[in-house]
Structure formats: C-alpha cells, structure tokens
Image (tube, rainbow over all chains, first blue to last red; front, side, top):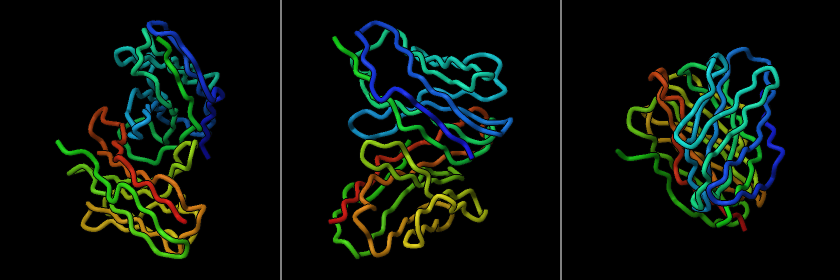
Length: 117
Length: 116
C-alpha cells in the first residue's frame, strides 16, 4: 500500500516570498510517480508538477519546483515568488509506476496555503 | 478542447434513495477514475477503468457503490440506498496512457452530493 503524509494543515506566506509545502511518502514500489495538485476554493483540481522515481533531476514547472529526496522519501513543493492567487489547498499524491502508465492516485490530506498581501 | 465534465453539479437526496452521477471524460482518454472528497479531506480513490480491462474496484467502500463505463467513454457511478456518510464531492478524472509525459489526471468539477 502507498501512503502520503502532509504534516502542515495550514501555511501562511507573504506575497512575493517563497514557501515550501512538505510531503513524505511511503511505498514498497521501486517505480512510482509523485504529483502535486492545487485545489482553489472553486473546487477544481489543477495539476502542478510531476516527479518520477527514476528522474535524476528535480522537476520544475515555472514557479513550482519539487524538492525530491528519494532516500528520505520526501517530495516537497516549493513555490517561489508567491502570488495572492496561490492561496488554495495543495495536495501531494503518489501512483505506482513512473512511466506513462495509468494508475490510481493516493492523496495526502492537503495543506491550506494562504498568501498574505 | 473540452475537459472532463460531470453532472449534476449538485445533488440533494433523501437517505435511502439511489443516485446516479455521470462523468464524461476527455475524448480519447483511455483511463477514467472516480474519487470521493469528504469535507476538509483529501481525495479517496473509488474505482478505475482502463480501456477494456476489468476495472479496479478496490476503493469502493461498500456494495452499495457501483460504476460502469459504457463504450469506453461515459461513466456512471451509482450509489444505492444512500446514507448520510455518503455526502461528499465525487470527482471524476481521466488520463491518457503512454503519451510521453502526459502523466497527469485531468479532473472534472465534481458532483456535490448531500444526503439528508
């Protein structure tokens, strides 16, 4: 079984500053993929970034980067230059297989990020 | 192009009634997933369809829950004899296998189910 732990129920950050959202995972698989999704108050789930277990470099997508530390089983999301529109719930998730294979996602309980002006 | 659509957006039903929730995935996507999100919680996997393979039903919480996917496209999630603990947002997602780095699941807007 796979498990995601997000230990920060809520986080606050000042606009234009960087923030790190924590995510640790547990899996016995050698091949897996890690995701971060954003869920604004409107409710839609927005894909942010993906990291495969065999990817040697940390994933980056614009202002988002994933700090992947495989030995520590952590996949923290770093948001640089926070914007007011970043205020949302953020979910970390894991799936089996790191390639293009489809599989169900196991989600953490999420972190509510509030960006202050 | 069109994203994942779900209907209805909101459903209020009385305890004990049956409900059907519909999901239209992105055209051509081979995989379809149902998740449930209870208030203030993360998403809980329910069921997964991949092409013509037998669905992965391992997340269905009870035999009151069932789902089908017709013609490899539209899916219906049915909850029989609804209970108050079934109240949640039901999210559908679809994805395309093997398309390079198209790893992500695309989510619909969800159906908010309230059982009174």
